[in-house]
Length: 461
Image 1 (cartoon, helix red, strand yellow):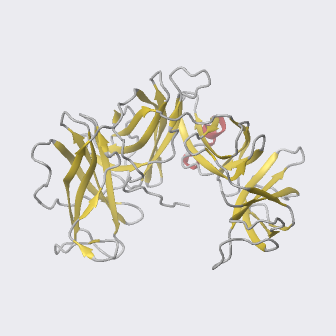
Image 2 (image 1 turned 45 degrees about the horizontal axis):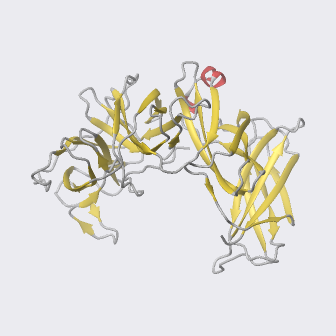
Image 3 (image 1 turned 90 degrees about the vertical axis):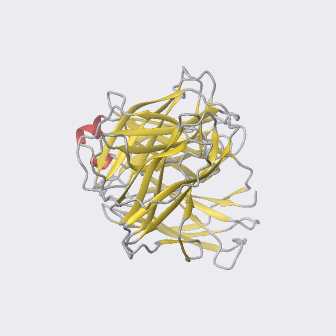
């Protein structure tokens, strides 16, 4: 299913970002469908006169979701580090009427937008992308100007590289995968990462940022290979005249040292009846404190090129010594690869250190439950009830089901969470909650017999 999760404006506390750009040696191998170009509205720029921060190119197109996208690139040609870069955008129809609305749904002539990288070192660049739905309107023209920026005292950059990149045409979309490699003797924090597609003249055709990448990287030469990590950026198409890719990122010395006492083991993989790839494994907490764990995984070919990347925030909390299974099934490229490519792919999984964190939640095991499995050889449903048998009022209850084959190998996994009923603030002692979740085992699985449930009641922190 083609779902859209686009980060059109990167605003997630991006106060210390500078860019590193890598223009790529992976030319496009096919030509997507035609994009749409609109005229530019002439408008006076409000850029401070003593600066040379420049919008070097802009373009527009309508993607497969019928969203009208305005994209482009900014370059810092000053001799200073700048931050809080703000752009101003206008989008109008053929009559010149504005198509933009504020948060209260009132028409406005212009809106402030922000690029994906909001702090720029001298010479650094960043893409931007803003979109509106074209379902009920017909955009005809746009204008993007530089509005303001501030001097920055952001931390210095640390050296890194972008390697093992692949560009993949998946339906209307183009997906860039690769690795960020730390070249510094210090542990680094890759604070932001974005990608763009360019035409033969270097103009941005499409751009997007991503949160699916390894943010914390160990010093160069780490014996366990933790000095490199995968990334994936999805560009929504159709996009015409793609010639090359470009990746933008910022890396600084990490000021925190994440707890890495977490072991990730892969136990197998399979395709379900719908062709979705599932990567199974377990996570074990070897640390001294409770954690909320996250995992990132990549598949790569014999040439070390990254084929696909996906990540997972595991819903349960792990106390010291505890293990839980996981199923990563949000890979985006594999469905477009040949059987030979997927069967020969090598898989890796590692802790996602940025999204793994220590916690102090009160965790209560629960075991008074009912379970009914129903389904066929393509999909199954696990439904039932769980009772709060503790003496604590619970904020939520997390259910885990894991099914195993005759050899006790993990076959299928899923989680779901239950919350207080509408109007209530907690699940009280003695209350019962209902759950239902789907399971997609390997294709042609005739029966799920060996399935176990576990429940975790989550109290106050």
